[in-house]
Length: 364
Image 1: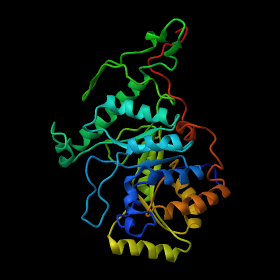
Image 2: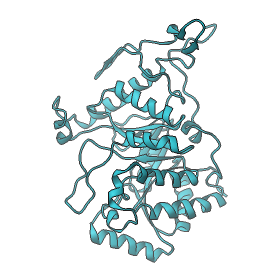
Image 3: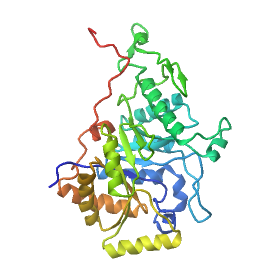
């Protein structure tokens, strides 16, 4: 038995993390641009009681030539579409904060939280390429330190805007004609290095108070959020990332290729790389479900991470084995919960409800 239960999220991007996945996947390539494609994977993850799914996004097309998938749906809108037909799985889209106003980020993610009844998160990432900056024509791409500082400021403003409505600001008193308590809406009056925001938000405080915020922790300039995802490719670097963000839930990225035998898994990886050579990000695992179920608790114990962000090489193949064989083996070892214990993503992750920074405490 292990001492702690792991937190597990899974990427449901495209046909899988490997650029050749679309050529071997059972999924129809045309389905990549339908919400139903992502819904089936979210439901698989939900049936296994995983904490959340992520859906990647960017302001640029994927790199590569004609042999790789290029083009994507808007991640936040896609997860909003599948929110009403899922019930427990957390939904975490990537949102590029550079070139995006924090007011828009706050309302969009709050709306996802309402659509999912408290299961929203946001993986906030900066943009540093001139090609992406050219889409907007307002300014050149920022340097790394400035991009990370802006990313942190966006999340600061976003949480302030979520708090600009108190939880009980909506009165709905039909008899008196009073819909809101105006004293429970607040200006944020934010003045920072990148933004000046008055507030309040146009969207009431989300069901979770604060949807879960997440960042990648690979840059030395990254600032912590509720979740920090490290894409380090060896255990020493993962351990360093976990130590660097002591107040956050740190998850390590693991790119996975699974099969019923270790040799078959290695053959699968070779076949994919023969079609399109590729080196995955994060820790890399090629082997059987039983082997992965043994490694994950060991890696967590050695590095101090709270869990893992898993990236299947091919969808649905590797997700099927993850949900159907890895998760049951983790449960048998006491390393993963048998069922959801709460309804919101914050509850899944063991995060308390965020205190509203503008609410007046009675008697204070």
